[in-house]
Image 1 (spheres, one colour):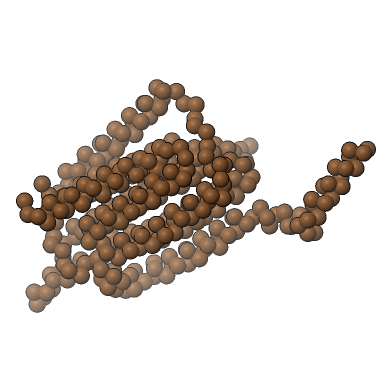
Image 2 (cartoon, chains in turn green, cyan):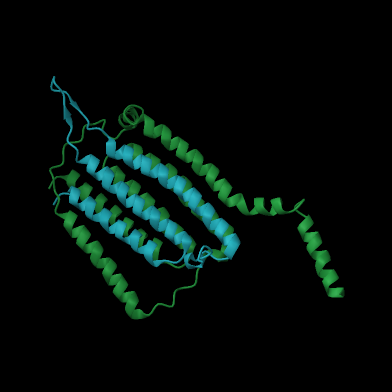
Length: 196
Length: 113
């Protein structure tokens, strides 16, 4: 066994174990901030797996978009919600819980053992494969139109996120003359109601 | 023993199953969104692994050029869609929390007749 394949096995096993463990932590732990930390470790270990697959450009994208934006967004929302982000555990019995876990595990095992046997010969890596230049030339060549459509999608996403998150405030403002007016009139109504 | 495409695909299917299970089982809207991210990441791993096993292109004059990085570009678009989805999804969670003071997905029954 040559040293490069030993290194490869070590890197793959390490990142694979980390990815599975952090994925389990993401879906099973009760505290949302721990789920977010699980997701953080998960996207980092996937970036490690992309290194073993010589996808240099995607490693950078994964780190910037997932670690830098998506996980931070999750943490911000958990911070904004505070204790409200946690939900009480379900009152599910032990038997359905165990049966459900066994069913899911069997699906995973069958799926994994089916694709596990695929072992086509791996072609030697051409030095420029997966580099910024290689992917960039494809992205701005054959994939030019979808790339531009993706930017439209992201713009729509930003506008949509603003619209959805702001909708409640907007409705309050529409119903009243000013922001403070409903509070004052409500207070007056209540005090009148108390006296009457 | 060498690492084959099967290893990556098996790992990716295990990760996808974990994500799907989390999405189906957990009632917390935040964890449901995180499970969607897990599933999208598992698919990305499949795309990138398959692209690594694409044979190189042999040119006329004996030159060897790398295969088209279509799997990488697909994964790139999936990441872009996942980012937009996370932004809109979290905005919906925030807006839902203002309405119901909880992030439990089974509290979202306002459209029930």
